[in-house]
Image (cartoon, rainbow, N blue to C red; front, side, top):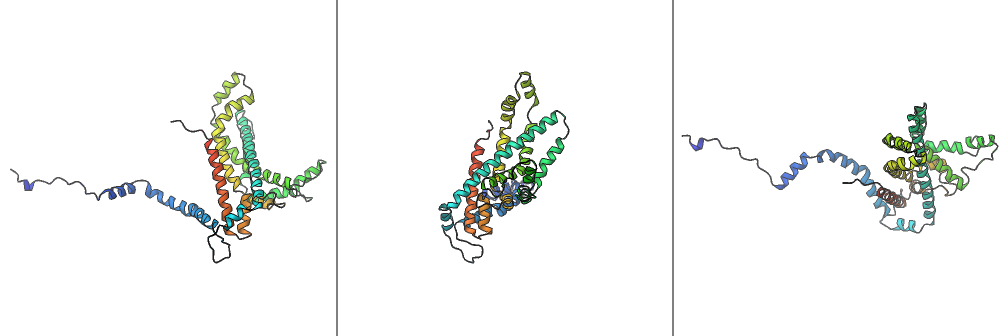
Length: 314
């Protein structure tokens, strides 16, 4: 008979250090260690600047001042500024015209490319390359290019073409109404490629059997576009609108190179106004308040457009 003292002792269950140890072990074995570097980078380069801008918005900070104090002067000066009303009107007209123009022209080019590919026509690659060439040009260079094209000097390309056609030259940049139109044209020319790429990809996902069935039913081209193409493009159109809305609201370098915000304040939009406030007038507090206003406008419009996106059914 074997003595019980010599029997092997069953392995004891591993000791736990309590609830805290169990939670720590689960976190260590989960995705958190892999996500921490990304979270730290996002916090450092995105969250911290926003927090610092909010702090500066409630100060009277200037670039070369050594001492700053918390104050509502920057916010109150904006609330009572008559200039801000003009800036917001310019921003509204510029943004709406630019966003609508980019979507409409991008959709037209995407439809043309898709139709040409289905008909196996040559030249679609050349067309896409030409459109994309405008997109890769830096915005500041885009402004300089269009400034040369719209120039009212004898070397201005557009006015030279008008003279050759017997049409009187147009004051593209010196007339306040034409200056805003010139800024919108330059923005649409560069940003159309982004809309074209996104909408082209969305068009390629539409089943061609739908168009074949519509053709059998003798549907007209506009009916096929209205009842087949647009409903299927709705999510892509809304996402496109959100993205280019944000980009257009934050764009200032094209206008800076094209008109500098002039003549007067005819083409000065909110982003350019904030840029000039900080880097020309050196008013950090007022510039931070303007950037917060721009952020609120962007988030509000983005939220409104997001509500229009179709929701997934569960």
